[in-house]
Length: 264
Image: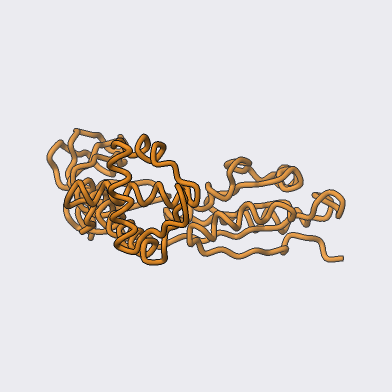
């Protein structure tokens, strides 16, 4: 466990070192004291100890530099704190939180249910027939929303994928350079269709394809894939990076294609 969680002195030491790292090389002990909530005298004492321990190097009057050893200690403490936070959110709060699901059959409060994801939405079915279960805390008719708590197990979800379909910018033909029939066929089997860029939006309209959104398309596609849905993002070539950066950061499986472009 992080030393910062075990005693107040280590926690204060950690916060002061963070403030020094954030302000280096010109470090005002008064500013550090105000940020941490201690006296300037206390900051001076902690800083002196950090220098003695090799975590901070003093370069002159009010000039300090965090050493490699200090950086390593900060990383280790941050890692331990993150591990503790993950334990709280994943192990502790997960057992007490409540979430909503769609009842597949009539349910009564206190009834154990099996949890599944269908069409990207959480569903609750009476009984314990699956790997993920919970307990209903409200009554619900079939098709109604029901509150669930006491989650156990893991909901099985096959991650979805995203296809990023490039549309040329207007200067290169725009929607006029798109095979609308091919585009419509590509979108036909997708659970979610989104667009980014005027040329992409116009192409979908001309292909008579209804899109879920033309805002934050990358985020929408990432969320859909996380829920096991397939997504198509039609995007103007100049804006592809806005979408793929989000997908890459979210570890989403995706491919980029120009399959809907008319061959020259």
